[in-house]
Length: 97
Image 1 (tube, rainbow, N blue to C red):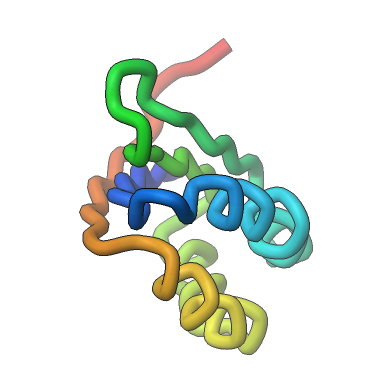
Image 2: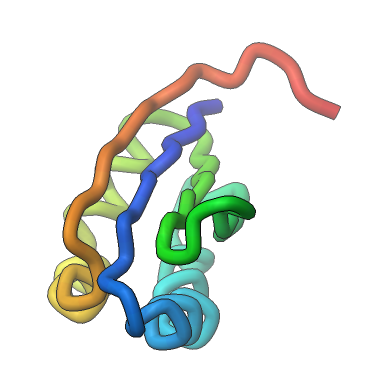
């Protein structure tokens, strides 16, 4: 299992749009992907417009399939309009409960 942490620096004033897009479209589309396990959107406590998306897939291949899917390609421009910068870190999940 892998976990991708994507940190987003959302454009100030676009936070609610970002959250709504995640809840109403992005997470729903991702959840239909083969190999999908979970996705969580976290908002940093100290920074108003900083978010982290923690995404779990069964494998690197299933995560790549999501990024190459028609759903992701359609949604990516919408989410990209809402943030200035993003970074990605990928982890292999060793243990969880």
